[in-house]
Length: 292
Image (cartoon, rainbow, N blue to C red; front, side):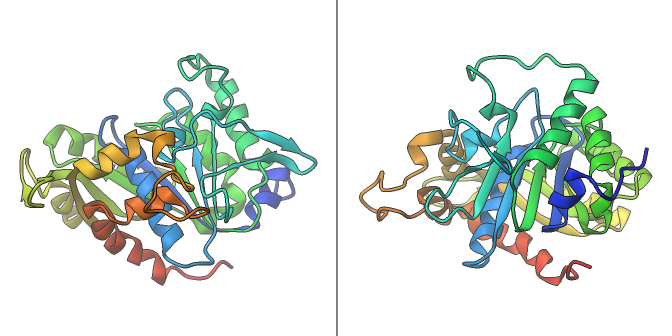
């Protein structure tokens, strides 16, 4: 069903230059951590860039925790919901998730398709995103109702939407990643590329990368399918500790090495091996065409 071009959603989307949907064929491949790293890396790509990250993994929201804003509430304004800003002082990294709407973090979300669809519509049409250079959307694993609803509501901005597919090197993950790629082709969703996550292990002592599992599967899949390969990210214990620490790592003046008012999470992230690797992944967006 086509979406009207004059709706609250279309008006919000008109202020967003690029929309990047992060998806995966199966769970457990680190899709949300890749979405978070993408948002942080885009944020640091320019002192003026404005980034939003939308978490539509409604039954398993993890973005608030990873950005250190777990437990924050969403406020209503005359112009809609105000997103939670991970960088409170600059207000350049906006976040929205169903996790902000739960009374308790342990509450489950038991919703059927229509209610999920209504929530996605509200996230896109009622949230005061403002002017954004990038909106990164973290989706549930697989290809489900949420993905179809999302693309339906994003139809006014189809020329500004692209996808990143996350996989791990193992054969079972690659099979599911192929299904995800097949879905993007079925719905005419351009794919910016494939990220091979958990490709090896970074030793926290010496920094050497060891191939605990297999490696290169995502790159080979990209080659065979004619899709850009964005990079291989090893398991990084520093990154795992950082994103799992939540509010304790948010860091506005919480550590002596970080001045008051600075975005502590991004400062610490930039010191991880993953940040250096992910910088190469973000370079692909420098060549994106301007918004029409």
